[in-house]
Length: 234
Length: 213
Image 1: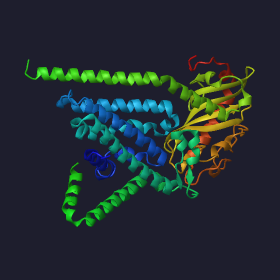
Image 2: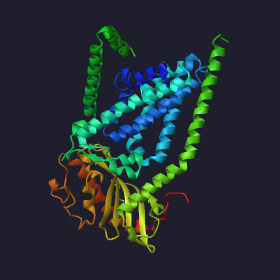
Image 3: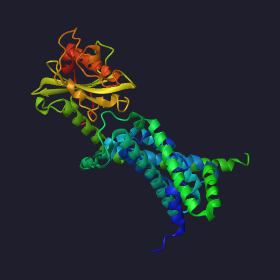
Image 4: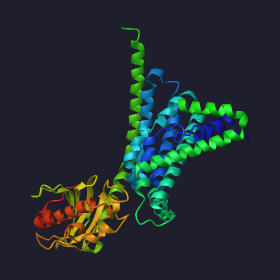
């Protein structure tokens, strides 16, 4: 099976090169606020991904009928609708998780990654590609959330998957891993400064890898520099 | 009529159409999830009540037998709801949902269950914004501190054991967080005083809260 290069490019963009969390730095607010544990990160990541896919698909489906002048209010309407639906569904089916994520769910509306993708991609491309773009951007964001959540949870609490039962039900209680015992938690990592610091290291790490890749292909050095500039513009 | 008018009216029609469609979607989802959400919060309430009041001490449905915002003579105490436990129609205990307003970062919602003899049956923290890692030890998930209230009594008006150890009382404070446990202890104490003074009123008042039948 041959993968369509267009999809491959979308995946590459969303997951790495133009990652909404690490490169575009969109949606910083939820990114920093809820990543105190892996489970919270996973919950919000999945919710964001769901909203992103739905809003991208819808925006793309209606793109012919939306006049240019009023596209932004319509995008906001659509995104707000999906966020409200997600909120209601989580309230109904994952009540405990809803309680721990509750106040951050409405913040998905303000996540610029979503309206950014609607405007930059979905409003100009067919439904299939737009949905796929939503999926990949969502996955990229989810991955950053989870990695950040894991770092902060391990350093701050010494555990992993604490509270997995909130997301998956009682059977998942056993997922909790205690990596080391802390008499008192490492507060810095649990509070927002820890998120900023860990995020800084993550971005630095990504830049190091990009740099290594660029060095491994000296011929493409020029392109690599250009890529950095393009990222800033986005 | 300016030449812009047709465009404006067309755009506002489209916008209105989208607003209606989006509102309809939300309304539909709300309709579908309403019962389930109601059920979930009711389940959680029952679970919380069963945590603080022993099952064998009552045979009524506590979550249906409750009074909202009763007026007491102590205006400082912010009581939300009182759930009443009865065995063979005799009052045995009450669970009082109240707020400690003086936490380190705002209100701490508490569920305080008291036996008819004035002793504490159990206390749980329902909602708080205390510092993670320090003040959040009032959650049962983080520490069993909150269970140390069980069985405690206020001996008389000048009972000064109802304070954290730092203030000469009998309750532990947390390393780095004294304000939080102090606020909780103070509110539990005040609630007991209120309960003792108003037992008759509390148990005789007609149930007025509403899990609809």
